[in-house]
Length: 317
Image 1 (cartoon, rainbow, N blue to C red):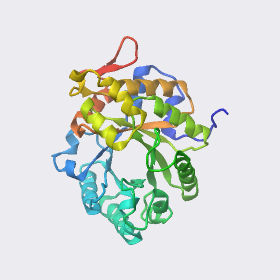
Image 2: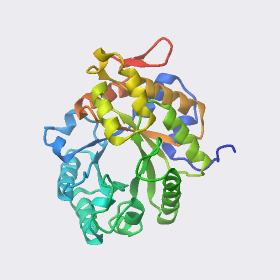
Image 3: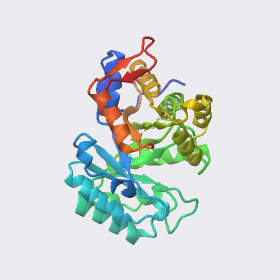
């Protein structure tokens, strides 16, 4: 069955409406990228202004056992420094409706938060009354506090949390939620290390008639050893085998690895498929924010050169 021509967001429509050269599309994909930081790692960053373009969407993790007040405090700091804070709201770490209401009220009231990432969260069992992000969204509290831009999780390589059919049912529910609530809902995917899972996922979204924009989770600059560690802990499926193949040369294990081929393959996909859902890149800074931000900023400035076969590129110093 051919992909359905459901609505796509303005950014995607603008990008794919006029075919252009590969280098330009790589830059367009990186422009307006988002990234993320933990409250613990943020303490070590003197100024986000020295690392990121003003207005960047900066996601703030809410890890198991964490304190949402720390997330709110970091959101306040990011707002003051000129960024758009995007707190994670992890269902299984929220005790009850009262805690959720307080969290959202503080985030919106103290940091001007209008965008969040609503996820189930890492624990296998819920700490309170919420087991998944759908239960969070169904409370109506996001609308109450003026939070109308909501990211939800996408799993191109499936996940250990539930069956694949349940993942698709959840996305259909969230697509319907976006329509009935008037909220701008988008999918932020788990990271992978090659383009094929993302391309297949993009096509599957269209096949299933899900019209949510797709933000691709890209691993930032890190050593293969570090990437393997995160891949094992997050269970990102076939990407683990991909990394193991790259790491057969032991001397490369500690060298920085960049996702340049991944970006080139995504750009070629965007150029070739008019109705792609891909609209943005979200960088997981697995090897540290500074390294990844410097690399992506260089791409935004056009300081990179495609290889002769146009299958990868190198950032210029």
